Image 1: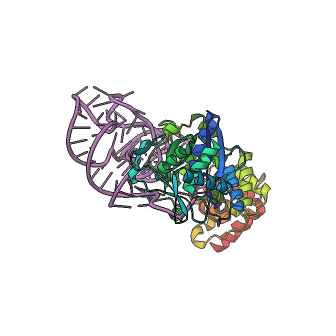
Image 2: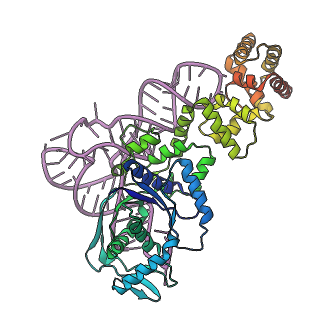
Image 3: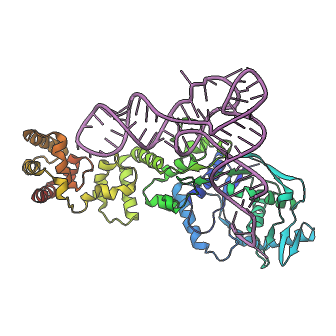
Length: 420
RNA sequence: GGCGCAUUCGUCUAGUGGCCUAGGACACCGCCCUCUCACGGCGGCGGCACGGGUUCGAAUCCCGUAUGCGCCUCCA
């Protein structure tokens, strides 16, 4: 039987990183098995806004590279079908009315068990399981009823979901049995925790997939990083692209214990992917990111600075602070310039007549000037860096000066000399 | 409280009874490279939660304890 799985986000629009990781496992499994990956919006609560959040969800999933087969379906659309099944169950004595609601009759003894791909055998004593409400007194079915019914109707073969659903599973299994449906294979994947071992939440930093996008992480980074949270192909490999991930993924190797989200490792990995990009592709993505995040800087100029920063920043959000001096005035403080007056003047003199005004010539003449003042390179160049870039940390000095141009460089040098 | 699940370096993990003197990666520390930062290179620190078993032999199997997490809604 062909594999068919489903991703079931809550219709809030906000895609939590933990949820995305679960969807990713669904997607990887489906793609590797040559199966189908469906998108299903599970909402039985009519008060939530669904339509616009669906667009948001689709966009977020697309960004990271997770796709789905067919049109998304809505739990809401099958409420009538659920009600009919519930009535049938009542007629068969498998469910009963209780104060206007309908409860499903769970077995009183024995165990409900399944072989979970991630957990192994899981068993629940039926005696401990209460009869769940499946249809509210206002006629709306409950998630715990609608979800397994949809799995049956959609022919879902593997239910891959968060482990917070483990305790729902025996109930859902009994419901599926009661309606004569085929049981899917279950795989309950663990949660993702924050760096304090608690559930990942706002105070840990970014938690929504869109926030990572806004912070300047690449989708290929997120894909790779998320896949490695709770799964590893072996003990060595950490860098894998989309195709490798699909080729090597296996549910059997998903860990059953929760993983903590390590932002430092994410930064490292993003740096790796950033550096791997071809220079023009890097420039292109940087320009797009800046545009998306409200920086109206000249695209061509941004593109020319790109090679100077590609090896130096781990995510695009560092760019404005790191390279903003190319796009606006700088205001170095006297303290930062301390003791550099002599070298600033020498640099001014050396650069004013320099031809050609390129990085190589700039470096040569500034080194000569430093030597004359008997300054070590580091001592000589720091005040110039501060004067020109407004910071003690910057892209390569000589390349930056070339790009900035003679006029602007001299202007900044003189302003700094006056302030020093 | 009941039920369920989990527990290997700080973090992500490899490990499925002898290949383990527990391997890799991130982080951290040191050195090298160097105009700052970063990259890169080299080296280092660091772990099987605890206690009992089983076995010639256990990170690996069993039991207990501890800790953490999830669920216990006419939420999803």
